[in-house]
Image 1 (cartoon, rainbow, N blue to C red):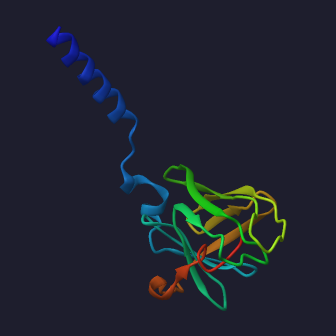
Image 2 (cartoon, rainbow, N blue to C red):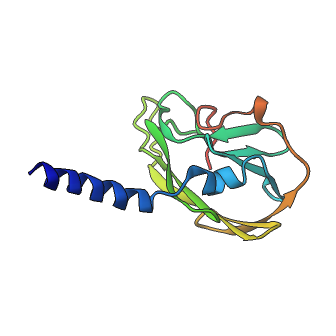
Image 3 (tube, rainbow, N blue to C red):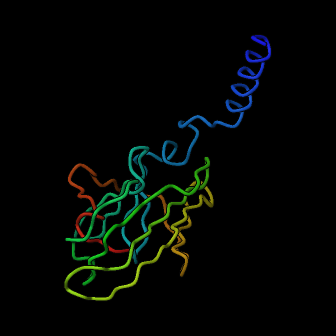
Length: 162
């Protein structure tokens, strides 16, 4: 019986380790600190510890995975109870995350409806990144202009609505 349990444990461990991809081989690690630019959007950058850094001409935001109580945060006139950001998939050349928000059930009665959107990033070539927000596709170009993410603020907690 002990041999059977040991073999089962070894089999499970061997199978699971084959499917695991090193975090160093994933999109946000490979493109950690690389800046991508699009005239309409501004700058994007990635980090293993954040989903995305976004810098337009006015402000720098970061977004990180988690579920946030946003019932007291004005998000474009809505006060959603929760906003949740989560990784959908990540490979060496692509990355996507989901942004979900609940209905607005606040006292002020704005009546905003909940929803969700998935944002996808795909490397096209050494200098091009495709960004899709489920409505449009944008091409970003790798740039040597770096922005310093140190001063970036949490976009979700600042009421930034994608």
